[in-house]
Image (cartoon, rainbow, N blue to C red; front, side):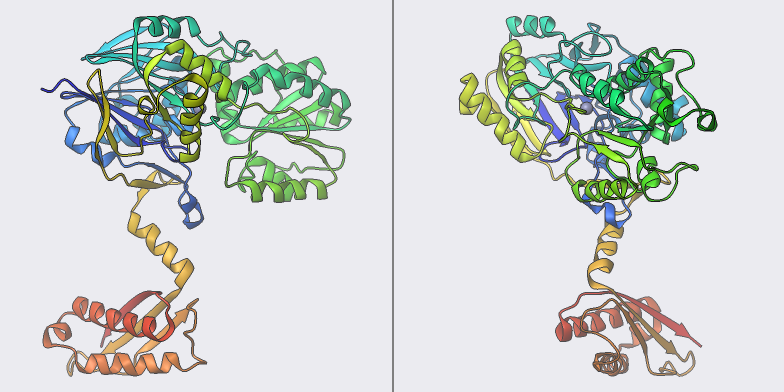
Length: 553
Ligand SMILES: [Zn+2]
């Protein structure tokens, strides 16, 4: 057995989401996080994507555990899917497990998996790896950085973090423990890059309180706050300020209700008795006594905010006099949808307050000065930027190089599928695995074949042609001219004569079909499909999906 550690990212590098990293030493492998992503293919009916776990098949007997840094979907969302393939123990914080249990229950596998709850400062030995769970601050509660002792040295994985010394809920980031590891010597730091392009420090979760107090003091009608359901600190602030201004809070939207319920049950939220009201209690309250805490900050069409802005959500609609607070960042890709949503809200006569107008949102990720604090605490030999698009990883590297005096060769940019080998002295990418991703249809928790998505894309861009040939069973000849129907195919329609020429082509192709093709409809269909495909492509340049049907009478 060679004395090297391999670090292999399956996702989360060069992209937003799908965070998942493998640590391998000899015949033991640890999986850190199992996140989902939100692919551009969403327009083709794909809700989410997950890492390609099939690549783990060859290590089936080597995987010892899955360790979760925190409960965000981009770190936790793929957990049910990996567990269905590889049923190994999971280690996570109390809150992360609360979210995980809900998810596993939905997938019907909660009873079949082994979940280990860990607290900050807990040290767990799993084979050759000894892991200390270190409290990290983030927009969610109960998040960890990990210090992992391996036979070649200690690896620190930051998870998602910012340096928040005054979080709303729980204790601040545990820099002391990180510094202790720094003093003992850390081989490599895998470090969050999401905000590596942002100068300065990321504000504390508390920083939004003044803006919320001002908004609540000014508002005369209902206040509608849209936030990420997972921003637990933010939810607490909304509850506190509502209490302070004598308003009741009605929580709307499935994920918001779920997270409030879990966080409250596990004791993370402090909600005054009588503060929460149900939707039917609203009719007994005047507008200035109401806060609606809703999902849909990203203008998701099925979420509460969008529905209230465009039609009604469970009988509620945004109205004149309402104040809508968008207390979330815009996830890249959602700009246009959110801009439209803001338009709808203005049309309804409501006032809207977003990040650009007042400080109603702060990031959960480390800006450059947070990165400085983390890196100086851990003092690793190698820095490995993770979590983020390539631009962010690159800027992370530039910052460390220019401002913290790290040498180029000690900052390693890796990509998904890279096999990074560390022997205690050197670090080098020795191999690259081809990493695909798996698409998921969330309605049925089903994997969607890559081919299906490819076909949907092709249908959207190139259209479809249906070819029906009717074959006489006795004579093995065509009963009628082939029927060809085109939908959405550029340059190919009845009017311009191409359909007629295609019918002639198919008739001719049929006449020269081989005996084997005539005897087997599968062969015949494929033969005619290829002939028609070639023709349409030559004549029009289009590559539609072609569906051949052979009828036999
Ligand atoms: Zn996160």
